[in-house]
Length: 130
Image (cartoon, rainbow, N blue to C red; front, side, top):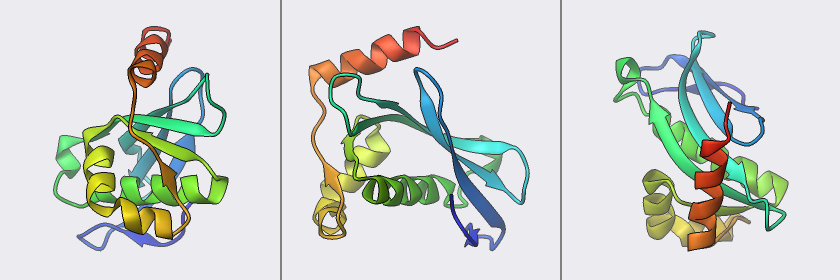
């Protein structure tokens, strides 16, 4: 999904996407190693073209290297490329879009505030994950 990304230490990282039913994720690896971070999402079952991002986590051994920020930026860039509306349930994404939502929209992005129905969709998806 990405080319030539590096973390704050200068180490090469890669962001990919794992599509699954019901919960998918943007993933990040460091130096061709295993996945060390995830931004989990559900594609809204009631509204085509909406991606509910609900949880972002980076392995503690890799904390402080900017990996969550890279995941966030790549996920938002991917949503622009795909014409998806982001629904930020994850506090990291919600905070970013509260602060920089105008920039995201100016770059071609779309987002909206989550509703109870979105939270319910996440709850159902998480309960039904294998």
